[in-house]
Image (tube, rainbow, N blue to C red; front, side, top):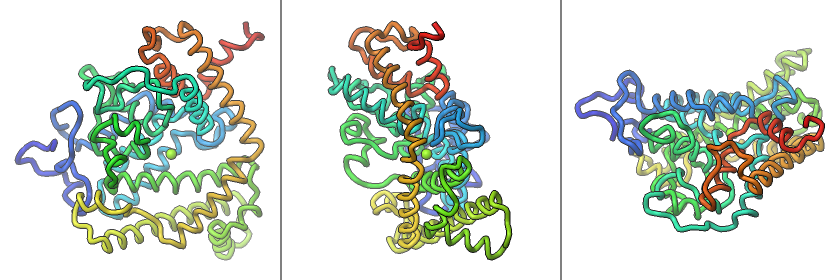
Amino acid sequence: MILRAGEAPDAHEARLAPYANTVATSRGRRYAEPAPRDRSDYQRDRDRIIHCSAFRRLEYKTQVFLNHEGDLFRTRLTHSLEVAQIARSIARALRLNEDLTEAIALAHDLGHTPFGHAGQDALNACMRTRAPQDPRPRSADEEGAAGSMPDGGGFEHNLQSLRVVDKLEERYAAFDGLNLTFETREGILKHCSRRHAARLGEVAARFLHGGQPGLEAQVANLADEIAYNNHDIDDGLRSGLLQLDQIEAIDFFGGHLHAVRAAYPGLATKRLVAETIRRMISTLIADLVAQTQANIEAAGVQGLADVRASAPLVGFSAPVREQLTRLQQFLRLALYRHPQVLRSTTKAARVLRELFNAYADEPRLLPSDHQRPKDMGQLRAIADYIAGMTDRYAIREHRKLFSVQDW
Ligand code: MG
């Protein structure tokens, strides 16, 4: 509970559904702070996320196309902004807490490595190979946050996002991290292995005991899916790796495309694609809102406790989910596994692997604030350092360490 006694909830929260999260029902922050004066606690979370350095670094991190491959492709930053926009629209329609939803959406990818999923897979493999097990027992002090992490346990980007906001950001005099509310932190932790959940305490309890996070977190999660499916089509077509006739054969895209063509015959391709994608996003949002409302009603949800105890309530209707799945299968084969994308991601994975091994073999190559006394979490510190790099910073560091031409 953050609100001071006798204080009215803010106007936004007063009109929310009974199953929305509010500051009045919040489980609060890890370190107690006075309530903010002119904004809600969830707005403060959002503001802290926007001001943190991990957020700015998203500008130069890969979504699908490497940052240097073109200026118009999505980056992690523009992706996160699109997710936040979609998530807010849905939250408002469902009378959920828009500020909390936005905070979760903006923070959801803060822990991503450079070079997208290829980078994260490479870093995970490095950590698993070099540190298969946790070498030392944890003290009681270290439990309950993503702050202290053993070397073992690989690398998970969701967990890393939580670690960024709980520990790695160094901006506040009184605490490590951003000291966000429980609800924002829980929403950021979309997936988590049982092994890590056991160590993290309350914020990860649902991964051990079942149960769902609040609807705001569920909305942010599906807004992510709406955003990337649509913008990856857009970027895929723009890059020339996808062809229009190829994707026209996929029902969900084809149906919307034909409707636009019928309404606007002779429309130039650029606008045809943009209008089709715009309509697809609208269809997905409208379907999600309607189906979620129906789910909430059918489950007889009265409040937050019911949300946590129910199966996931935010979701698409069965026919739309099926169409979306087919679209995703298409994108996986035609775009994410396109030889040109694979060539880039293979190269990117090699860069991260070689950086990791060089630092692990000789930690004195690291900047001094990333060096640790022997066996005291040096590998985790390397993973944090590499995960925090932008694409171009990683490429530059790799060149400095390995290039003979630039010697
Ligand atoms: Mg994302």
